[in-house]
Amino acid sequence: MIAEPRVEDLLRRLAPQVLGALVRRYGHFDASEDAVQEALLAAAMQWPREGRPDNPRAWLVTVASRRLTDHLRSEQSRRRREDATAARAPADAAVAPAPGESPATDRDDTLALLFLCCHPALTPPSQIALTLRAVGGLTTGEIARAFLVPEATMAQRISRAKQKVKAAGSTFDLPPPAERGGRLAAVLHVLYLVFNEGYVATSGPLLHRADLTREAVRLTRAVHRMLPEDGEVAGLLALMLLTDARRSARTGPDGALVPLAEQDRSRWDGRMIAEGTDLITRTLATTSRLGPYQIQAAIAAVHDEAPTADDTDWPQVAALYGLLDRVAPNPMVTLNRAVAVAMTSGPQAGLDLLAPLDDDARMAGHHRLVAVRAHLLEMAGDTAGARDAYRAAAAGTTSLPERRHLTARAARLSGGR
Amino acid sequence: MKYMLLIYGNEELWESFPPETFAEVIRDTDALHEELRASGEFVGAWGVADQAQAKTVTVQGGAPVVTDGPYLEAKEYLGSFDIVDCDSLERALEIAAKVPFARYGTVEVRPLMHEAAPEA
Image (cartoon, rainbow over all chains, first blue to last red; front, side):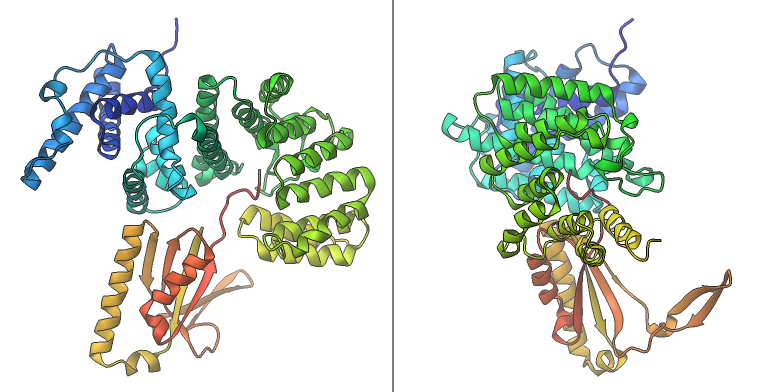
């Protein structure tokens, strides 16, 4: 017997397909998005009670089309004027839905939706919210809870994002080839941010944030299925798998952050590591364009393959960070590289790499720079210097798990208690 | 990123407002909140009751000890606070400058801690 997917999972998977079908047929991205959201809610209420329709996708398209045409008609009469766009909706659309579009169209629709939601006119928080709702099929309430803001605030943010996309004159088509690379990079960045938002291995009321990580992996998998040849998409998926594999070892029983070197590696998820390692290995063997996600995934794989922290192939990690610093120069990369270099050539070599960052406006006084310096000073045996730096770094972060961790490191260096 | 805007003042200041100024401040405050709702940056805003109603709690030897009033002698008291969720510290400071009470008292801007991981 084949287990049916849960209603919720099925709805989330169908959401971008249904939205794509509506936008393709009627235009009106913003109104269509609202209509699909209403249809998803209706399905979530009705299907468990009355049974699942034979063709769930067609059911959703029909219901959403009806909501959309109702909405457009009432808008029309409210305004008491001809609305050229509403006239595009065929009168019989509500009762005669087209049969399911071909899978090829669904594929392009989901991609086109992602490009639309990650439109460069939007700020990253808006891109994230819109992507989770329009492509991920999450409700506004779910997104609001994940980001700890009132539902009305999130609703307003999503509605403004849709207006902005509309004002930017964006069409529901794949961007021209010349722009596609840059637009895809924006999509991957949003998926990466969603993953990071959720990558906090705490329990209790914060569990819903972990769902964001799952959602990011699910959407990245979908993009990877659509663009299997793209090395960066594969690299991002591998990076997520190799990072998420360490989730349960990343926090102690008291919720404190456990650094990589001190994690209980038997708690890492071996299946995820195998999948991520296999994916990045195959990708690196065939890639035509080496990008930052592929290199970061390769670094994560080197860490994940070491049975103990002492077995880590640090020369390999240092070399990969050196490569990453050339491909995508970024002070955050330099920080990580300094740690790897300290492991191969001693703490002073790492500290030397940090020195120029004090003059970098993006990094001067940044708590991450101070935290890495504290770590290297501790390695070098400068206990007092390390303790002061840990304290300064703790004061500079707004992440509670990070602050607890840095405060504990400083305390450990105070009088050996 | 969420920020807390703490709006401080004291009775002397609040009582010195002529009625029309107070009405203006309330009106401008409502307008600012409406603006923040529309921009999707509004998390919440609360006024706190008079400091005469404040209680201070400490636990001494396992037993709670409750005393009246704020713990410290201060010239300015918390009058109200807003929580906003915006893109940058610069934007939070811009919002703080729009708080009508900033014309008379002070507005302290504090980033709120969050449970998100530092960097993956």
